[in-house]
Image (cartoon, rainbow, N blue to C red):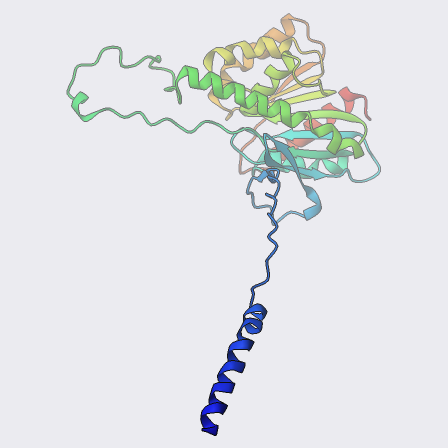
Length: 308
């Protein structure tokens, strides 16, 4: 009997303590804080990959064009003379340090008192692939050749060519507009040295007054890929007012050789007092020829710019 009573008492005590345990097990409320969306990051310029590991890091600068970075190679003047800056624009489709004459000039003009700015040139369009459908191979053709037989086939369609020429000119305008700030440490005269189709593009831009006139312009084998533009080049060049050294090599591009005589004749006809054309051998494997070219450039630049 005593055991039964003890059992009943323990059950009653257990029942009365259940509410207190249930109250202690209540899960506390969790405060939730909404996370704010992070701000959209500003796009960073995409660097153009080039390999200049062989150059001092201090020589490699960059400019930004249409959110892309392009290399600009800067070398200070050397020695006691501090005449100014030589802006060097190699041929299209190259780099700011394309092997050959322009790289030689960029590295060796500094002892004459000129800092050098090597500019990345514009690119050329890819060569078009002309394909004939298999079903058309045996068909009789009509006016298949639109270009004269004695002229090279066009690389691109005329409308695409015009668009790309405009893009090249826009690229150069944006490049040149950034050089004053970078070359501010090298006060003095400005000479512009350029070659091949890059020279043709710059002559066009100077004639349209889209870029500032240099104190001296030096063009090497200038030409334009487009036949019509190339034929207009001599007159554009002859009408420029700054001192001009026109260097033509016997192994230059055929389009440049085609207008060489006319460039000289027209400059004489229009009585351009500061124009001079000279013929120099510029073999790619002959550094002595490059030295002769550099000596000619240094002499003309110093004399005609008044920076001696």
